[in-house]
Image (cartoon, rainbow, N blue to C red; front, side, top):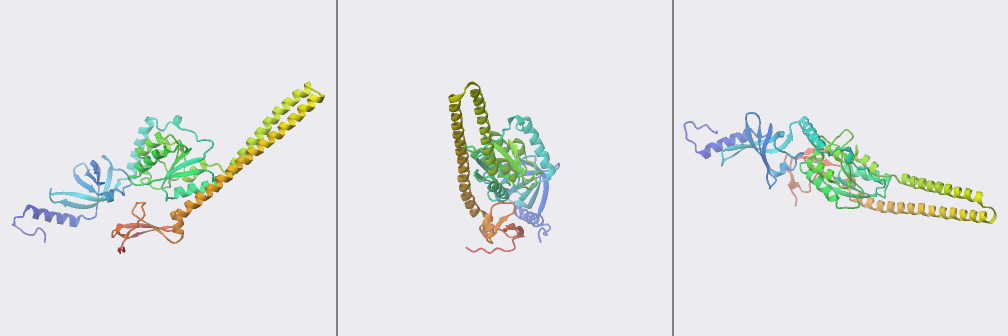
Length: 405
């Protein structure tokens, strides 16, 4: 029995070992709330910080494997709930929390943080309506920054395939949640700037909790959108969701599908515009010809009038031929673009994880990480996993692991 030896002198190592055993035996699964201070992210990926309240302070260590799964970027002053276990570091005789997860202490705190950030950037003029740019009348090529395996990109491709297959699409794949997502999103926005022929850049993801959408309200993303030379559309979540990217982008779209609707004119609409322009040209030319015809009629008779009439007739025929050639050329280009897009879309769908799921396969992810698990060695007992099928998802907990090389 630990610490039962009365009147016996312990060595420092003995008493420390006994205390360590007591602490680590009785405080294995704890949740502690407090405020972060002295936050130090190490180059190894581990986090070191203090957790404090009005009267006490305790040291916390969060290793890289746990830090990677966070849905926000911790900093001094954040009020959080840390989950983990107590450990005593014998060489210093000090105890600390080994954190396995951490969350902001409440949605209310997140909303307060976002409101302060919103006011800060509003004062700097980042959200001014006067700096927002209009979408081009003709959009030929768009960039999409999102997860390449998420529902958002599938929604966008479906809408463009239905409305206008001639639009070229460049996908910049990125994480859309987690504490490193904001840096990856901002990196992709800056990467897109190097493509000079992009007409519009869509930054998007599907719906989620306030914590899930937090990367799109982080400073790195706000700054990258503000600096973008390409016209931007923010389409984050559903209609009721609201991220700071919506305020700084040139255009805000309520959903990914709506963003695709905004940038795409349907083939029928384009054809109607061509026909409308053709009719407008015919009317203008006819009006001009009739105007000159009437003037000539007033001052000319006989042979001169007949020659002028023939000239007018030839001009009308030539005008009709030019208009017909113009319409045929536009329709031919639309048909060629449609054929190219069909090939690209078929290739993309063949490579899509959702196509593989239809054949009976599934995707396994751990916790909140979007990265698929490829090896049983990446899992531990009691890990929570999510299995995605062609239709639906299930959550499970690892009960046993068998490694087969």
